[in-house]
Amino acid sequence: MNGPLCDLTLSKAKQGLLAKEFSSKELVEDCLKRVEERRELNAFITITADEARSMALMSDEIIAQTAKPRELPLLTGIPGSLKDVFCTKGIRTTGASNIIRDYIPPYSASTVLQLEKQGYVLLGKTNLDEFTMGASTENSAFGPTKNPFNSNAVAGGSSGGSACAVSTGQGFFSLGTDTGGSIRQPAAFCGVVGLKPTYGLVSRYGVMSMASSLDTVAPVAKTVEDISIVLEAVAGGDPHDSTTSHKKNTLYSESINEGFGELTIGLPEEFLQEGMDSEVKQGFERAKELLQALGVKLKSVSLPHSSYSLAAYYVIVPAEVSSNLARYDGIRFGNKIEASTIEDHYLFTRGQGFGTEAKRRIMIGTFVLSKGYYEAYYGHAQRVRTLIKTDFEDVFKKVDFILSPVSPFLPFKIGEKINDPLKMYLADIFTVSANLAGIPALSIPIKFAGEFPVSVQIMGPQFSEDLLLRLGHRLEQARGKI
Amino acid sequence: MKLDKNEINHLAWLSRLSALSGREQQDFTEILDYVEKLKSVSTGNIGPTSHVYGITNTGRNDEAQECADTQDIINCAPETKDNFVKVKAVL
Image (cartoon, rainbow over all chains, first blue to last red; front, side, top):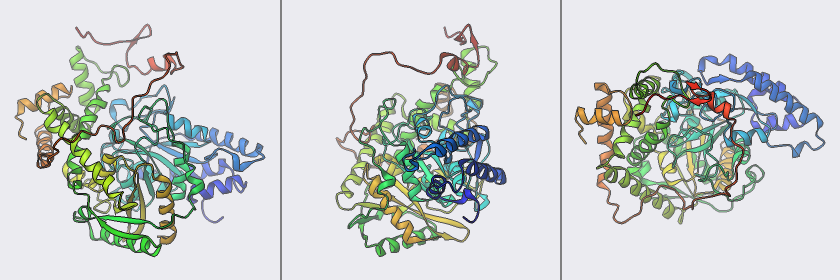
C-alpha cells in the first residue's frame, strides 16, 4: 500500500492486518508517530503509548496463532482512542476538568470493557470541553483542540479531541459522547463521520454523566462503514445501565452493503428557515442532489415545535448537570484542598475546580429546579420535550429519514464565541432535537467549502441504525472522495 | 427573568459555588432571558418526557457480586485515615 498506515480506513486496516500485510505493532507505531507529529493540535490529554504497545503485542500473537482470522473479535489490533470521560481502570481520566485532573478510576466503563473484548488497542484519552459542556473544546482545562484544516479555528466540541484525532490519522476511531451534537458537530468540523446512536443502544455505565436523559456514547471514524464496525462492537444492553435497551444486537458491519428499497427523506421546513452560512446551505443542496441520484424521494415536512428545542435543551441540560456535578465535592475523589470547614471545602473545591461553563450550567440548573420555579421551568421544558419528540414520531409516519445541516456555520476562530455563551449555544440549533427525541443521527461530510469541510445530518426513527448506516454508506459512495 | 444579586448569590450557595462575578451574572441572566421563549408554548395536559421510550425499572436477584477493589476506591480520596475517607465535621 502507498502512504502511511495510519491514513487507512479502519476497514482497510482490519483487512490488511488479517491478511498479514502488516502487524498491529506497525499500525500502533505509525499512529504514535502521527500523534507526535501533530501534537500542536492538542487532540490528546493522555497518550497511552506503553499500554498501546503491549496491547498490540497481544493482538499480534492472537492473529499469528489463529487459523480463522475472520472469526477474530471485531477490532483485533486496531488502535483507537477514548474521549476523556470514559473511565479506564488505572489510567488517568480527567473529564478535561481541574476538579479531577489526577483521577485514576478504579474501574472501566462497560463500553471500554467491550472494546477490550473486541481486541482494540488504546492510543490515549482525547481532549474535550469540560464534562462534555461546549461546542468548541475551548472549555477544556487542558487547552483547546485545534482544527486540523486551520489551526486558528476550533475542532468543534465537545468531542473535539476525538474528531481531530481520527481526522489526522491519530487512531482509526474514537468513542465520544453526544448529548446535543457533541460528536456530530466536531465530526463535521474535522471532516469525518460521527454517529449519535438511539438513546439506550449503547451503555453509559462508567462514562462521566452530563445530562443523563440525553447523553449517548457515540463513535467517530473516517467512514460510515468504519462506524458500523465500532457500533457493532459496543452496542447492546448492559445490566449496569438500566436505561439501555435489551433488543438483540444487530450486525451493522455485516449488513452495511445491503440495499434499502425505496426511501423518502423529509426536509424540515423550520430547520431550513434558521440562519446558516451560505456554504452550509450549499452542502445541504449537494446532499439533496446526491440522494435524489440514488433514487431517494425528498419531501418537505414540518417539525412545528423545533424552534423551541434549543430553549428546552438549555433548561433540561443544566438541570441534569446541576445534579450530576454535585458529586464533585473533593471528598471521595479530587484534589486535596486546605479548608477549615466543610462549607469552605466545598466552595474552594468547586469554585477553583470547575471552569466557567460548568459553573454557569450548575447555576441555571439549580435555579430551574428550585422551589417555586421547578414547574414553570423544568416541568414545562419536559412537557415541551414531549411535543418535540411527538413531532418526530408524526413525521416518521410519513418519511423514512430526515435530512438537515449539522452546524449553522463553518468552524469558527478560537476565541470568537467563548465569551458569549448564547452565541456558542446557537451552534447546537440543528443537533439538539435528536437528543431530545432520543433518535439516531449520522453526520457525514459532503464537500469542502474553501479550506473547511461541510457535513449534513441524517436523522432516523429510534433503533433505525441498520438502515441509517446503509443509507449513509451509499451516500458516501455516491459522493466519492471530497 | 430578573434575579437580584442576593437571589443569584443564594443560588451560588445552594450549588456550593463561590459568588459570581458581574460578567458571570450578566451571562446567567441572558441565558434565563433566552429560555423564557418556552413560555409561549402551550403544553395543555401533555405528560413530561424524562425517558425517551417507556421502560420499566430493572432489578436483579439480591446476590452479592464483584465490584471494584476497595483499596482502588479508597486510593481515589484525597484524604483518608485507617481505610476510611476523611471528611470535615458536618455537624
